[in-house]
Image 1 (spheres, helix red, strand yellow):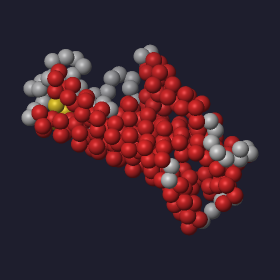
Image 2 (cartoon, one colour):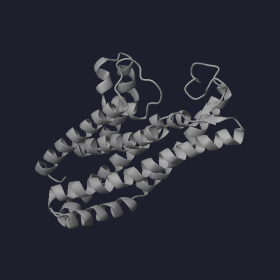
Image 3 (tube, one colour):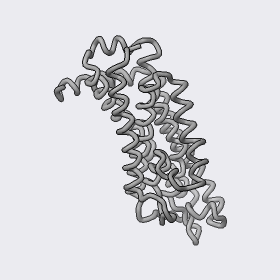
Image 4 (cartoon, rainbow, N blue to C red):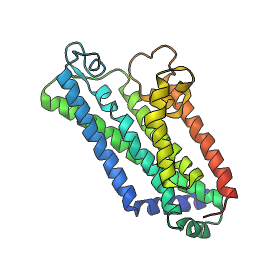
Length: 261
């Protein structure tokens, strides 16, 4: 497997992703939702003016809005877009038998899988970067238009880089799961049930739940002091990365052995 061959496959797969209307709409919707959600959260923070416990994360004692904290509140919902992007990249292969054509063009299954994964990572990274940047920009714009004082915590760059990494990796988790299940509906149900229902419920009890992929990964963009027993941002993102690597290895093994259909 040469780098030149890998580059050709990755380029072809990236071009293929770009031709899918569902992928284009998902990317646009994810970036747009980032801005809208961030603006809504920031506007709510301005209304609270730091007077309630819920507003304390986004506002200071003098009513100054922490733009970074407000912007990062949208990541929990924006992750749905990256999950869907991961699923769409795989389901498009299996929905109409395209996978057979793809493997006829690239008989080396591992070359195809790695090339497709590299292409998807490029698309996901671009989407995550745009989403996080747009989220911050929308929060900052709302604060400035309101005329309220703005402030940023001391970990803005680290937290936003962590948010980008989290979004890409949680999407990669869905991408690998989609290859294992080979069914878009089953993958959507499995992934979103985990990140939206199961994990938030188990997080209330602490303990081993902190090592679940999404709970651990969200530590990467945590601002402020950590609660007792919580994973550090670096440890959290490494735990999520470990989940992704494990699923990708399992995907590679099963993809090589199963039939293309």
